[in-house]
Length: 119
Image 1 (spheres, helix red, strand yellow):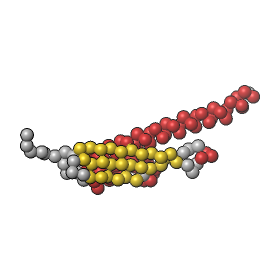
Image 2 (cartoon, rainbow, N blue to C red; image 1 turned 90 degrees about the horizontal axis):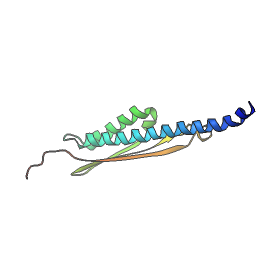
Image 3 (cartoon, rainbow, N blue to C red; image 1 turned 60 degrees about the vertical axis):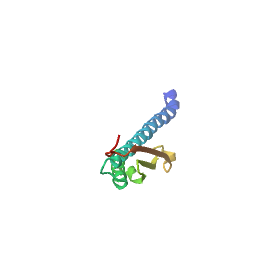
Image 4 (tube, helix red, strand yellow; image 1 turned 120 degrees about the vertical axis):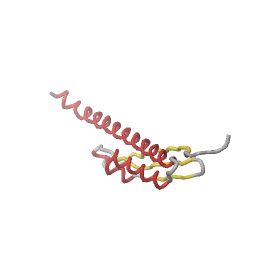
């Protein structure tokens, strides 16, 4: 019983660390997927930067819930490419670091679709 009482705080700390790592990894994957989805929609023949930003925010909200509202999304539109960038913070669940966040950044770039005449 004494050994369990001594090891329990360390075991809980490791468990919280593993859960936090999994949540941050999930948030990074959602941000990357959101940027790719936004770029794909913006690169479509009838797409534009505004539609790309809206789609990116929709995917962020779907995957991260209310945390997705805190992300900044920018879409840059050039003649041939569209680039979507997401930046935000994911809150930590560790009790004594409750007000801290981990920065999550993702970007995606896609070539625009369209008919190109010529050889």
